[in-house]
Length: 256
Length: 258
Image (cartoon, rainbow over all chains, first blue to last red; front, top):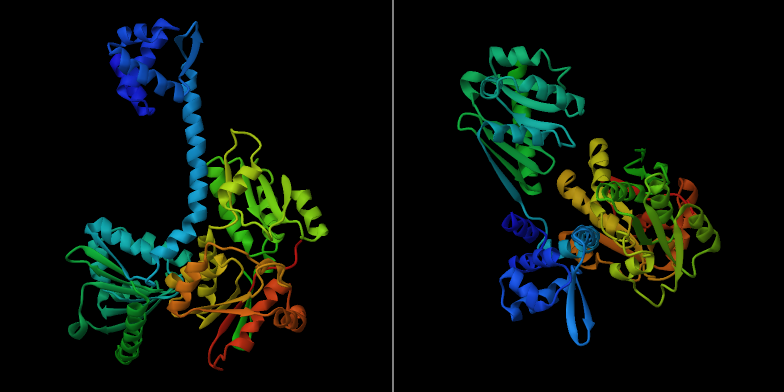
């Protein structure tokens, strides 16, 4: 039991010897260093050093009578007080960290904006990438295949479409012309989607590529991974590529 | 949000915020964080608006707000702050730059208190403003006032994510003390290096003389609810040659609250 208590006290920041000496002192009450050392099973010189350290933690008080040092344990509640003090100190440090954050960040950002790449694996990873699209502040531009999307994440999309629409985020999408795509575009209005269909025999594809804000998201729905690239330069270029494709797709869409 | 259009220029009006200042955004985040971590007291150096907004937001939360102000601050502003803040401490700020630890010591009444200095930091709170602009328009430029630089840096952070092709123009004063644009006087700021980095990235900062600031305020004060520290954004039209095809959002950072 004592060993367990000693281990618990270690969690509060006491060393094993400090825990041993404090518990011994609690048991025997005000004592000489020799008595404490004997009870704790330590050398006298070691017990002396440990008692002085406990005094610094406020867990032991020292009195002198006729040139003899007597050690008295502080009540165990002092441990809680110590922790509360530490806790207050740490919260104040959080506040100070927040105020020095601007200076720290200015060193971190020394070389200007850095492109950021996130790699997501598996079905859950692809879902994470779709969730990121819901942070878009603008219309999403997308190359997408409805069959691949719905086959890869069955049950995910009705809710995703609803949440995107509720956030007021429109999507401009180019789909291969398939029965599933035609069925989906019948919901375009409520799902805030503008679409153009392109011939599936010429332009069939399975991945989804989204562009919004400073991000380009590639979702490989067969190989089950997603790549989110944050780069203003790349996003800008690929948005322009999409606009070019959109112009071209209009020709096919009008022929359908 | 209030975004009004004037040819290719838009005004994003933050004077409509609950306590009339762009700082409301930051103060809301501070109060939420302080409540989450059970902070007892907040201390900040203020010229009026920010301290007033923070003290008003803290009401009913149990969090005490201590405003540290310059002895030279207008008496009417001090009195208004005294009505809403837990404590207003006057210091000769012309002669001393106070660091967070010193401010916390000044505000401390008991050892048990957990105190945060919130004079600087929390600039991420302004990213929300960029998101709101981005939903309406993708401007070539956004113009904001520059005091310590927190708003300027926060907007740049937001623009990186939501308006990657937009450049931020900051308008400030040459005067570190007692400018006519009083909310922009800053003897020391932790954002100095960040501002230098931003300029290297292509964003712009212009510092105006007192005469220029006064003239701009006289010219534009009735254009909306602009005080001198807010009206300074119109100075961008004198300092930078915008092309007719380019769009600009001017941020009205607040009205004269205190």
